[in-house]
Amino acid sequence: MNQPISITEVTAPPNLYPGFVNISLRALVPNTLAPCSVRLEAWSGHLQHLRLITALEAGAKVKESWRDHLINEGVTHAFIALDDLELFQDYLARHTHKLLAQDASDPDLGHCLVYEQALCSIKTAMLDPRNGRRLGMGVTTVRQIMGMMWDDEHTRSGMLRVLTSDKQLYTHSLNVTLLGVGFARARSWPRQQAENLGVALFFHDLGLMDQNQPDLQREALCHPRHDAELRNHPLISQRFLSRVPGMALETLETIANHHENLDGSGYPRGLKAADLPPASRLARIVDFYESATSGCGYKEVLTPFAALRLLRGEMASQVDQRILEDFVRFIGHI
Ligand SMILES: [Fe+2]
Ligand SMILES: [Fe+2]
Image 1 (cartoon, rainbow, N blue to C red):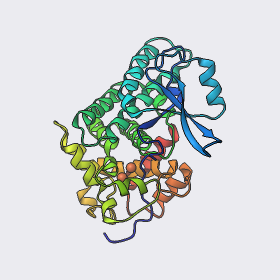
Image 2: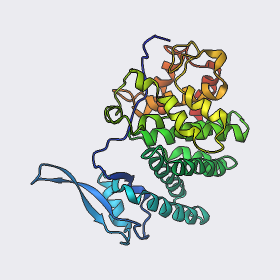
Image 3: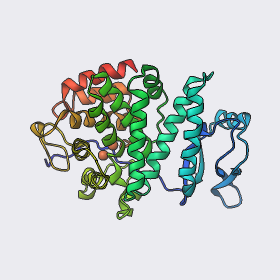
Image 4: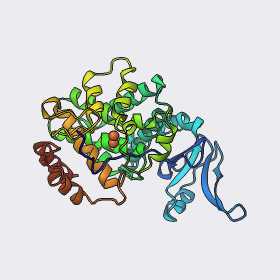
């Protein structure tokens, strides 16, 4: 229980522009009207720092050439006001339906939009983790994703193809959810059990966003910390989710256990193998793998091979090796 933790994933989104949140540029659908003002980062020579400038007014047309030019120049993100996040989520939902319904020339565009829509959903929840309505919307998002992925292999592989990685807690949470649900499907889990797992993974690090601990949030960006507050984040996440009506006990248990190890060296409670059901064991592996390969909690990003080697070697006594071997096969097929 008191062994040092060699690696832990701990991230929170950087709050460089209070009142704004970043969105992926690929979430702006060509030839639609921007649902809200969209801003870009620009260097101010006069002020000698970066600032946001309005690039697209609300209601202005999203020109494909403009968007593609920015993406080709390496601009991946834009910013919208926090208050516009739900509006933007509605915009994505509308266009996702249209794109998936029609025979699009770029099939991954629909998957990208589903992914971006889910990112908006988790951002909305994480920015206000005490807001039960927002958490409930997050649960609905997971159920929608499950509905799309579960019986449709094309969508399932498509969703796993469009994962992005930016060391932010939102992205980590969504990636872990998609990998976890996809892996549960590959292991032939019953759908309800996989959905309980998906909800758990979507919200597993919500406790890192505790608004009562601003210092924790500020310092949590990819710097491993081992203090008591941080070790407690699974239980804080669990407490937030326990307020959502109808939350499955299995979901709450998985959230609380996502840093527990089979040999008792995990946290927050130092549980051992006998206390850790399959969902908790699976969550530990998928969470670690995503953190390691996306660079969250690390000074450097590990390759998938290096992350899996660590799980098989140094961490062999901590994680379920049978589940791990299945996970290795699953990763190999993505
Ligand atoms: Fe965590
Ligand atoms: Fe995590």
